[in-house]
Image (cartoon, rainbow, N blue to C red; front, side, top):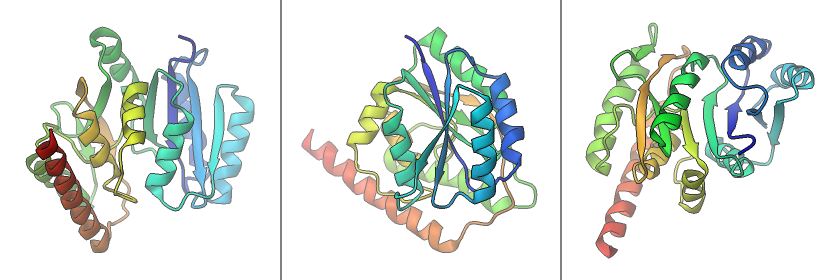
Length: 240
């Protein structure tokens, strides 16, 4: 199939750093067949958009997808998946330098060798790494959040809260059919809950987190969404 892989990458306020990231990405993909979609929305600043436009003009397999009417993070992410569902596999990657693009080859190797429907990056597998600097709060939330999510939703991920995933078109279709409760940080947990019904695996990744802190209101909202998902899943099981 032509254009087997698409890459949806969200940007916010990275400015000229997008050039450094996209150059690294370009070295780790097949530029003859793979398509990269740089996602911008109302939260993406003008400087970042300008640098993305310039880069995409010079690289034919890089394009900008604008979703300026979406109301939140999750809505933008889902709109990007919907726009790219014709591709056999779709990567979801952060554009803020948090995800190491060298890991892409590990994802593809698992897909080609084992025919997985989804491959998820893990910061907590052996050889994985979570570089969090002085912001240990994020590390603790991700690590213990995974344990709580696994327990409540009966999942088996070593990293249930992180992004950096590659999913097949049939997983994308299932995601788009499901109700997503989260507007922000809980989004990837909901995706993992759906991925759990398919053939998947995890691969170790190096993750470098920014120094931004997470608000307590965001944590409480994530817990609320977890209980909503738990109730929804329990109700579904009772009907099966």
